[in-house]
Length: 117
Length: 114
Image 1 (cartoon, each protein chain N blue to C red):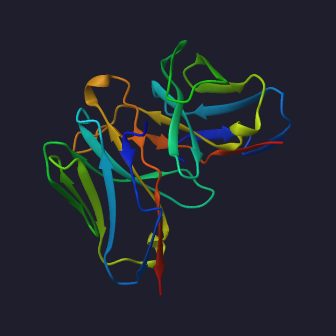
Image 2 (image 1 turned 30 degrees about the vertical axis):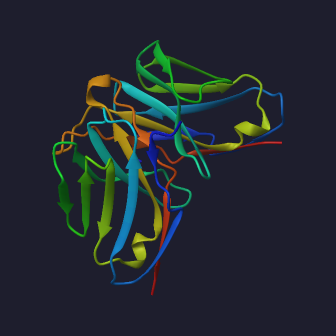
């Protein structure tokens, strides 16, 4: 997966517990993203980072926080997990490598499946 | 409000025939459009892209068409092969946003029948 590792790959937790998902990259890319995938919604952006300690909210950021203390690691934290946060979470990276069209391509990790009971 | 829409959740096509996937968008500020392919238990992978100043881009069996006035794009796969069975996501981005984030549609599940 182009130097992106997500952990854990699967997690089952209970409502109200904190959860942290980790994204680790070996590409030294500046931009990192957290998306969630849900049926009928596709992929929705939670938070993204444009450098160490530089983060911003996406379209579905409520209930989530992120941290990036090193270029290679981007952490997604659910402070108090709810059943609505049951989803598959994808990390993505961007090194501003543009296609011939000019488009910048995001490269995705394999995903972390989270179930909140 | 979802700015990129894929209104067909699924598509079934016979092997060797053409698959046509459709995508509509509402934000006229999008500069680039991309298609991603996703197999079960894997992350999405980039397939093909097009700039808003073009109306067609072709890469092997895959062609993307853009109708900017209608805010509509489509992905053609010819001929369809069993390995093309996957979920396809349409995505869009704004170059000038400087964050390079992508807005995705809900996806279309393609099943290629032998």
